[in-house]
Amino acid sequence: MSIYSDHTDEELTALLKADNQSAFAEIYERYKGVLFAHACKRVHSLDEAEDIIHDVFASLWKRRAVIEIKSQLAGYLYSAVRNRIFKAIARKRTESGYLESLRLSVNEGNCITDHLVREQMLTKLIEKEIADLPPKMRAVFRMSREQQLSHKEIACELDLSEKTVKNQVNNALKILRVRLGSLLLLLLLLSCLFFSF
Amino acid sequence: MDKKQLNELLNKYEAGTCTDQERALLETWYLTWKPDPAPPLTDKLADDAVDRIWERLQETVRKPEKRRFRLVYSFAATAACLALIAFFSFWWNRNRFKFPPAVALVSVSAHDGPHKTILPDSSIIWLRQGAMLEYPARFGRSRQVSLQGAALFEVAKDPEHPFVVSVGDYTATALGTSFYIKQSSNRSDMEVAVLTGSVAVEARENSSLPEKLVLQPDQKVSTRNPGEIIPVSENENLAYTSGTAYDMNFENTPFDKVLARIEQKFDVTVEVRKERYASCRFTADLTDQGLDYTLRFIAASAGAGFEIKEQTVFIRGGGCK
Image (cartoon, rainbow over all chains, first blue to last red; front, side):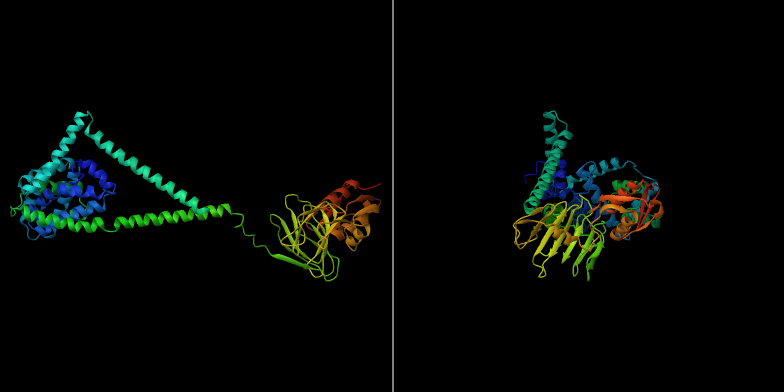
């Protein structure tokens, strides 16, 4: 249990963008199980699944300043894992157990055009798999989800929308960043003046 | 779609060059894909795997990437700070950084005196024998010249640009006056005598002159008697101007004599029909006046007009009866 375990995904995302390593650790803690289990089911190799999850989180950290998490952190992570699984299976396409299934699906023209709907379906698909998770990991993930729910309840009780809570956190971060920025500038100018005389 | 096309589609997906439609097809398949059942994941296996991943992630998270960012930041801050310091010290001392424009120095020596030199500002300097004058071919903010020996200065009037003569350790500053400077032969002492206007004399560095002295006409100072202002005698004045065309005092002087003096003093040629003005006589003290003022006076007296083109003066019209 870290000090961030009762933060919502949105708060963690904002903190992550502000280079907070503990927030990154909490995100990993929350999603490692469900993502790893999902990857294992698809690629049938523990090593490969390990690589995929590592790459997804390494990229999340490296690109934390530039990534845009449009809807939900979960959706972003699930899509990232799916994309890497695509790459993995594409690379070993000759052992094509899946290729026939893919061919059928494509030829039938099965297609969900709205990418937001696809993301929601992916979220449901992956989160349904928590049932198959090892018990401890399942517990951690459920707890974090319940925590999110409790945040929603708090927002309800205070008669604030969840968005407002999120905005308040974001605003606090922004103000902090702006203040730190101008403080640095002031220090810089003061040191300049000091050294000039 | 056959296998080949599917492979192409996968390649495009990996390269990120899919159309929205192709992406939708693949991602929809992913949602309906029923993979072969995998061996069950135990708590132990999963825990070990995610711990290994986290350990590997530490390399990324703890990598000096962040510190490098800070290092870059502090480098940038230091550089910006230095640049600001440099800029402000340059700004505050900008006068010191103003290099004089590269203007050639002209050097004039008088082997036999008095030798006349007309400076770019029309000031006229009469160098005594053995004297040497150095001046820039083009004057800047102030008119700086340096003198060795003795000379009579007729400084063109220009209050905006002080005329500064350096003589050994001293300087004499004037705006538009005439004065005589004589340096001792050992170059350590000097004497300044003022004919018209006023001249400020001061020491450039350590010397016997206590402070700035301002001399009025017919006053002189010698660095041998520092601080003492000495009256100039009539004879001395004559000596200062002897052999020069400094004296432009005309008394009932005929036109052609006046023209000759003007031509001699200002190094100009006067183009004029002399017979027209043959009967003109002039009475005026034009000593220490510039060419323009002198001509204006002469022309006005004769009811004539004049024009100066480079080194030639044209006088036309009017005349005397």
